Image 1: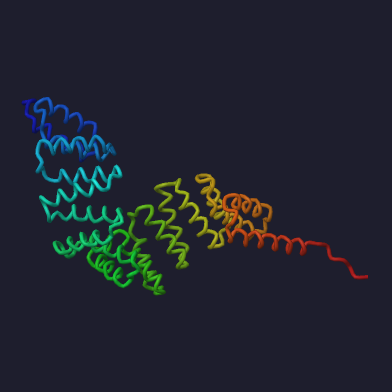
Image 2: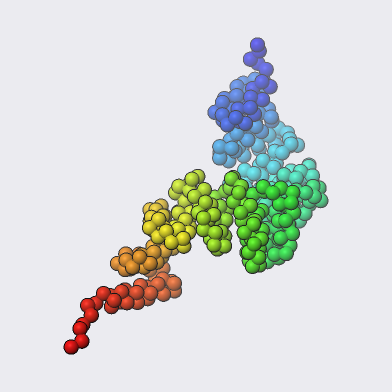
Length: 339
């Protein structure tokens, strides 16, 4: 009806960005600028689109343009903080988050972001203070409780960590990693049944990050739940077949279950992805020792020792292979008949 209505282009930047159609979002941005050169709304939202595509420098330039046009534009300093953080400029990110909080001190999301940034910067006391500020404003905020639990766990305060993680799962039983943390703490305390319960609660959730699944799989191995550990590692590999860590951990799980040939194949696949994976070589040597295939066991031991010549476990394994080979050779020697 009227192609000169600038707002129609502005809002389509947001719509296309939300749909993930960033090329069209950028097209709307340039069409909007033909009607109005300086519009903080347009620059702010095309910045969001650029940030979503990993174009942090361009996003930062757009958001700084917004500040020049309207220094009090909502959330713009927080977005600048996000871009600086993504670029590794942590001090500048902190400055911008604090600037955002000056105009909106009760912004829960910004307080949480600043707390997480402070953790990354190593200022754990200041981070804990931000998470406590969040809880003063919103006592049941799971993310704040979770991070306070992580900080307590890192400090060795397992009792305090348990309290925080319990609060998380009481409020949100599906909160990512909360059951895993409880399972790990109970395992450290020797409470096997509680650890198993929470580990299985975590495994029952279908959405997981790779690192979480690897931690969960390793814990399940420690608990002797080899079938469940295999599920966790296979879930990683379904999303990322080239994860060498998951391949190796799956190999260990299979070897522990007595499925030696399958374990060997997974360890070899891990080495195809990461050729200098010393632990995979170590476990291949152990697997071939179990099969009494001493030639292959010695081969993988040599490969591993080339990488870590002073490794004590490899040296012990080398001795085991020598002894086993000698014992096996002695058993196959023809017996002499006594005259």
